[in-house]
Amino acid sequence: MNKSIITKGLKDIGAAWATQAGKYVCCDSACCQLGDKPAYHVHPDEGYPHEGYIKRFSTLAAIDEYIKVAKRADKVADDYIAQFDCPSPEQAMAINDEAARLQMEIWDNYNAGS
Image (tube, rainbow, N blue to C red):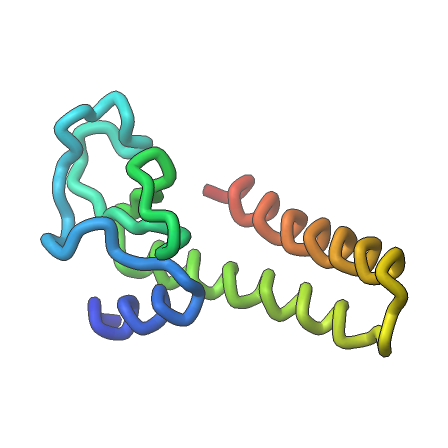
């Protein structure tokens, strides 16, 4: 696994590196889940690269796992939505809510293992 493969995976899920420098230590280690250990920093939403939403990972393998979970969550939601043909606006809202719930269930399981 190398950084270029991870970079492509991040792009696939709409995420981006928060820094191109590789691993580094936060200036304010209180903000880091990993304390003062060097970490890779990722913006989960490339469209909103806000400092408060940076995720920190100790290895490229951990980022790869995060990418796999994001893809799995999106696929579950897309597959659920694809079951329905021309729903009414009310049904569409309920379908989207259920799809979001299914995504959150996957993320909750991922976060519980972190």
